[in-house]
Length: 124
Image (cartoon, rainbow, N blue to C red; front, side, top):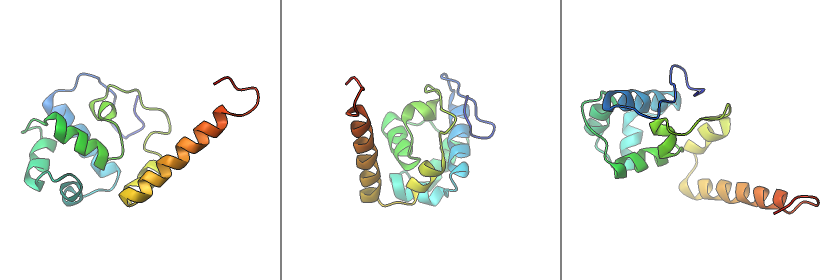
């Protein structure tokens, strides 16, 4: 189950449901269609058509949208069960960071994970 208002994980979204899910996620994150266009290269008119369910999304576009929304394709499709903290303050803050800063946050998270796996008593 998703923590986004009115969005349930489905795993088998049709074109219209996917469009609605993409729009709800974009609005939840406080992003404009123009921002999505700038971040993905997908024309604004196409973003609008996708969100209304009038246009199919190809796999490359879906990957670009996932990157712009700082989530996985699986989450966009409802295939991945979202944890209670999904789209947390950290994820929302990531949207405003530069790609370089996002990479730095990711590297730091990986460092913390690696450090935790090396703590005494932990099996790696």
